[in-house]
Length: 200
Ligand code: TYD
Image (cartoon, rainbow, N blue to C red; front, side, top):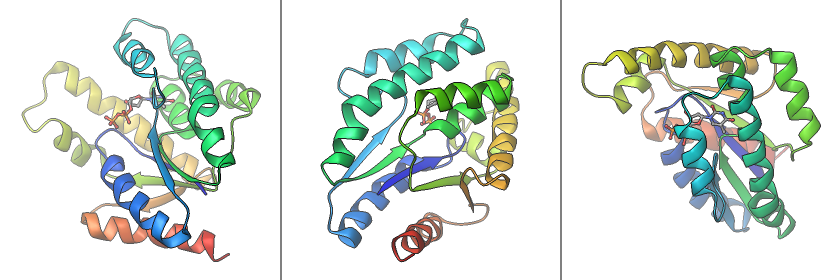
């Protein structure tokens, strides 16, 4: 299986990815590779640092860098793992690009969709969106009073969050409502979606 986890910064993807990975191996009898974007492949750390540190890049350059990173990720990790019969759980995929570069940084959504489509990346079996209110996620990543940059961050997270919700409504991914749920409850909701796919 190929599963992607999506959501705004601080939504809890990494914790859930770790738990799901052990559970999925047990559930399917196949090994599970955990990975992430950007930079989730050998030698990917420098491109990750470059992309996430390039604050003065235009949204279009940013988009093309994320797609280049994904192409490397597919070649080096995702395709070999799936071909070898492993499950893959990946934190972030095409829907991050739609939510952040279009919803967040206001690129034209049709243009972003067509560039993604042209790349022909593997399509995940299950795409899960951890919907955490931006204010709650933001408190997790910045427990002190937000400075100016963090204020801008919250405005961005609100747009990204809205974009994810629209994508979920259009059937791009499955929304998991995490509001008021603890870690175990979120895990149960995610596992239930994966179970539904496995028993289809
Ligand atoms: P991530 O490591 O998941 O950050 P966090 O652990 O804080 O959630 O992702 C790094 C950042 O990259 C995150 O702010 C979202 C952004 N991003 C995009 O803007 N577009 C993309 O296509 C991807 C994959 C990530």
